[in-house]
Image (cartoon, rainbow, N blue to C red; front, side):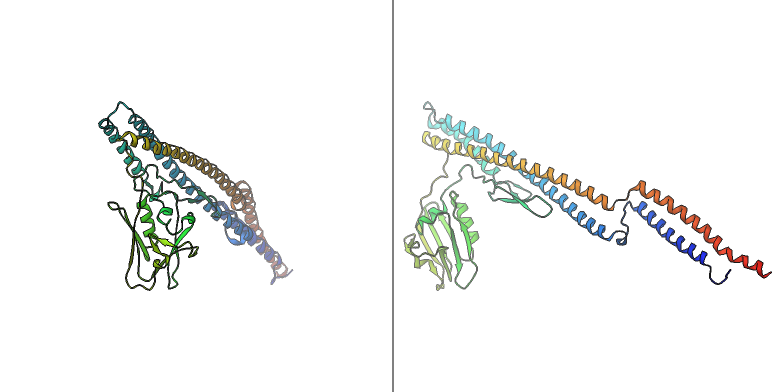
Length: 383
């Protein structure tokens, strides 16, 4: 028997410490609901769970984005439905105005309602959704998953009834290169500045053409149109040059009656103004005359067909977004389930472990007390 070294007490103390540590860990898990209270509990599991948490959050954000896009599309469709009804009535009025028993005075009465509906259609197509144009015509990219992949949603161009005057970009620049419709025209600084481009569209309101051109090339050139004289003016700023991307001088033979070299104002100290007369069409769509009613009906019928196609496109997009949103919802649910298996505590299992470690701590405490009292028997030998 020894006094200085109590092996039984040391063993009991070590086991009691281990049981106490495990009891504390079990208490932390039950109170937090998580199996991973500290990184040491499951380092690899914590890494995987962290990635799962981030992906679940991103997926939730993508679902929110899809919900907002659905609202955007539903708003589009609601407006398109109203536009369709207005166009239906406009086509009816255009037919009534073609009645041979009606005078132009009668037709002017029909035209009043026709013009009001026309203004309504044009005003609706300027609407936006939280600052994003509903009918701007530009495609929109919608995020469809947690990795930022996108679905391109076709834009709706609300140019259903002309506000005039009308001219195409290819018409404006046909004197330069009639065969280059569909290409890009470029305005560029000769001093090595970056190039700017604008697409040639098939149909554009002249005012929109000028606004688009002037926005793109504000630092180099501008276009203006005098509706009373029909005079079109191209102003090339000093130190600038106007040309097509193709840069084929055979195609740049003339513009509004001048040589291609006159498009180069790179050495000029003042702005150069080039003018010509441009013939435009549209802008006077009305049914105050029988011939006007015939022309208007053709335009309105085309607009009705376009609205029908646009509604079909919006409907297809809504169906796609709904399916994508449902898929993301399922993905998010399964990711959450997988993440739960890694980090969420099984209360039934952990409560059993808690009861075990609680008993071990109590019994270990009692046995340590017994082990500490064992050396007292040495006193009997010494008495």
